[in-house]
Amino acid sequence: MRLVFLYVMHTRGKFYARRIVEEGYYYLLTQLVKYKIVDEVLIVVHGTGEVTPVSYPFPGVSGIIVPDLQALALRDNDIIWCRGGFRAWHDVLKAWGEKGHWLINYAANTGRERWMFWDVIFNDLVRESYLDSRGRYNLAWTKPTNPEVFFPIEGCSIEYAVCIGSSFIHDKKGQWKVIDALVQYDMKYGVKLKCIMPGSFRHGVKTNKIMRLVEHQKLDVAITGMVDRSALNAIYNKTSLYVHLGGGGQNDRGPIEALSCGCNVLLETPKRHGPFLLEAPQIVKIAKDASDPVAIAEDIHDILVSTGVAPRTCAKVFFEKHCNVISQILPQMEKLFNVIRANSKPAPEALKEEFRDKPE
Image 1 (cartoon, rainbow, N blue to C red):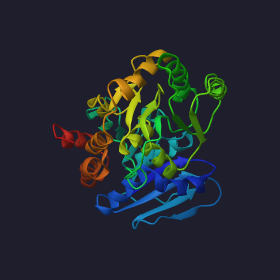
Image 2 (image 1 turned 30 degrees about the vertical axis):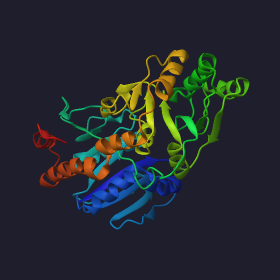
Image 3 (image 1 turned 90 degrees about the vertical axis):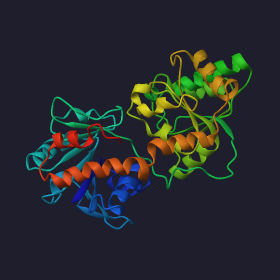
């Protein structure tokens, strides 16, 4: 049984085909092969130009860049896992489903979970798995991180009070809210917190004011631009508190990566993150009012000073309990693919029976 992982559609196909090795998805795929949950994996990047094979260092994992999904030579028992989804993929995926291929989706904040033809939807925003009214099995899932990229660095000293996100900097990600809060923090507590904000700037009404505000208020914020994953791992390890005040998205990877390195976390919108994050309020806190910079400043102060930052080992232990690929995610994936092996044609109702009243 081969798992075909549809990763991304982009003109920079070769870039993404190389970059995936740093992703949690890649690590999970390698472990699926290692533990014989699937026989092999094919990673697909929809790019431009000719069909180009891609080599990966892990045995049983290969890749390909194609100018069109129809260029893929599928096997009869191939299982399709689609990360997100692009309009150009819709009709091809639907046709594959009609031919009897199992179709799995992780929406990745694209909204493609609404496509009707999925058999399984990896849903990391719910606590319980369920068979929906359209006959698609929503599996309560945990997004993987790559432990070979994000991990605690022994002996690393804390340099920053706050890491302000770790992605593109734009209005929806909410970095500007933290900058506004830092101004209020200085006014209320007389301290300019030492912070770091990794990521490349995108335009936005609020975001466009960040640099001017940092300079005018003389805030102590290191603005790094986009950094590679190893540098980001070092940043997490040097930071006490990771703050993510984006109101949208789907289980943004930043808070999970930060937890894996021992950071405490402050979030805005819990329903847009994994439900397990609400189980340790001493480690993951929810902003009282993300629309009020004074309230955010108070939240940050409460974590850093008043209540005290929970020990980094606590955050790491919490992460391992819920997000460890080997102990937490693989057993669930094994149950899923055992059902798929036993049902050559899609049968989501069989998953309902397999996962009923059984601990994940």
